[in-house]
Image 1 (tube, helix red, strand yellow):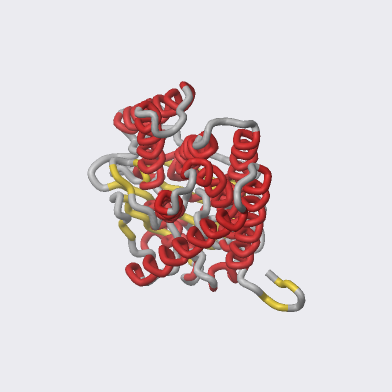
Image 2 (cartoon, rainbow, N blue to C red):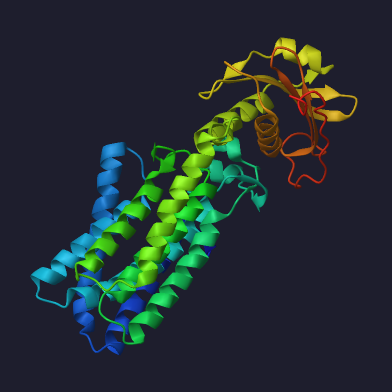
Length: 395
């Protein structure tokens, strides 16, 4: 971002703005509730220090400058709660205020994520397109020009709404701890749902669900248990949300188990990133002039971690510039849904305009994608789709 004639890192600028806004909010809430603002300022300083310690520890351990929101959040909240308890302060009331300040900071942080491209969404028909300057700052180069769902913006707006709801609860005279529980239950539900739209691959998964999804469910469960033990105020809808999250996990797992085409594996963020790198690699290679059969023979196959073999690349045809890909899968044939979902993904990664999908022999499917005028990586969304899959529908 350019400010006062100087170029400043967008993420860091948003983080500073979030810090200022968060400190202003907690100070105002402390004054409104008749609490000592200097005490809250001290707890806020502890929160900031813990956040910086977490960031430095993460960079020392992994060698990368990145943040895992839930880990930092839980570390900060646990540290501030411990400090308030040792100081003999009303822990839950100060935690109510602190969590809303942290949520404000996180909302601004997600705006920073949106601007630099971290925590990005999956490829979609409509979305935000990052440029080459983002890649020079760490954004995956293979996703440059690809429309990505703006999940960071959705989370930023939702966090602002959650913080506003927490302020209403806090100033409405609710029991101490009510705003704290509200924030974790509301944010946990939000984050669980948004994880299905995330497209960044650098996140651990267990049993098909991301670390954030497991953390969200476990935190809500822990709060419900603490509520029934009388430690925090819990309402019936909090338990209802826990049941809904658990039911969603079971339903999603069951649906994936019945997915014969294994669309979940084909569209997993790690696999999508692999396919994006393949498309970027083919885009950088010299264009092949001639028909599709010539290109198939000249491009070496690349096999992904999910066993998908990709052959082909950028070609020149009578219709202009196109991509031709021959796709096959080790061990079994593509089904109708799996082939079409994979083709739709490849079209997005190629910035395709129209496309055609045809069943070949030996389990191979052929995909021809006409890209936007002017070569690969155009900046207009796909407006037309042509499919030809006559032999697959009857299988």
